[in-house]
Length: 126
Image (tube, rainbow, N blue to C red; front, side, top):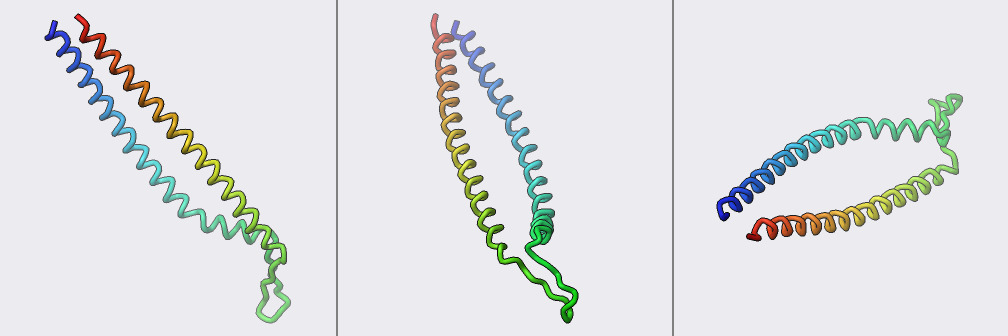
């Protein structure tokens, strides 16, 4: 009976090790994808910001003046206020999501640990 328990325990350990290797490989692939997304974002975000800002009619180019002259609207402050408020709201939503996710992960780990304890207790019964 002891050999069967050892065999079962070793097989479970091997399965856990294989699962951990699979998770590590998937995590590595996800990391590469995230780096690619970050590089693409860093490449296009500044130009997108400039084109969006200049396309909002907050700025006007007056070619009739000597050498041309760029004027700006007095309502330009609204752009910054709205952008900052929306950014703060977005970060608040992200923070709440992270807190929820931490609690969910902690409860999931507790469930996994109790399931493993139950499995080992069943195996150890004669």
